[in-house]
Length: 373
Image (cartoon, rainbow, N blue to C red):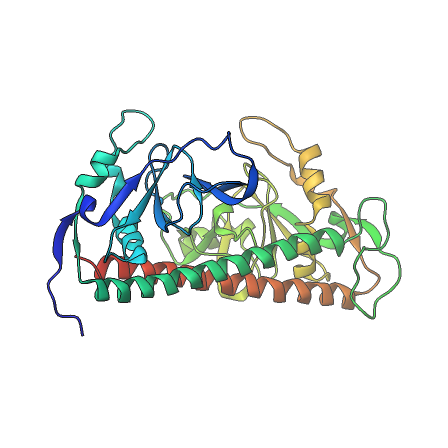
């Protein structure tokens, strides 16, 4: 229903740019203080009682965000208050699509000035159209914030359960146990539970093209252990030079060079697949692979990595060290499977939230491109 032409205006026509100030003379209180990185602490006074958009004066100059009154901003963050008939959320969207780096005035730490901001020009529609567009982006931002909060909660829950659902060092039962299971857990060397423990191979052809999924450490989702395709190799190399490291379904992967202890699992959909020499391949005899994936993410294994890794140009672990890892196992395979299912369900929630956040961010990026002049 909006047909009017948009007007080209300077930012000084639509906002009032204000400087932040030092807060150290203020007492503690309930007024939030913001810097270029977001919330810092709370104090007793507000610098303004009007909503605004924060934009960095120095340092991070390309991350605008809404400031809901009352608040205080430090001297590295401008707060920009919309003038009459200009919508706060539309201004924020305009700021998000402004290429602030183009206006950087420094030769060192990025910086902006009031004069520079005031002289930037952009197109603005009527207030009603601004409000409609601003409302859309506000809804998108609220959805994103909600999914990100939920994701953080699930990630926090998983971290807690990884520390409580496996016995701590010196203990024979976990702090939290699923209903219906009892009996003491026992320690085993990982080697005794594995059909094979080996590592990947670097292909001769470094074009990273082909039909076969080639797994690197960066291919492994740090939260869930699921794999994404980041490189490929040829079927000829996979069946020839790389034959020793052909991956199978339910292989557990463990990074042993560089970033240590990134743990993944091979799903049927990932095959055919191979991996490089920075990753250990753990092929189990009969233990539940998802249980083992999560045990290898537990705090006990993080402690092992910290104490046993070789520190050099790149931190590393040997296959011999991986073989010697002490694994706590419950009395029955059924309990392993139940624990694996619990973490698998939690990972599915984490994955779905990550995917939804990615979809919403892609949608927002597209709308920021297409809904403005």
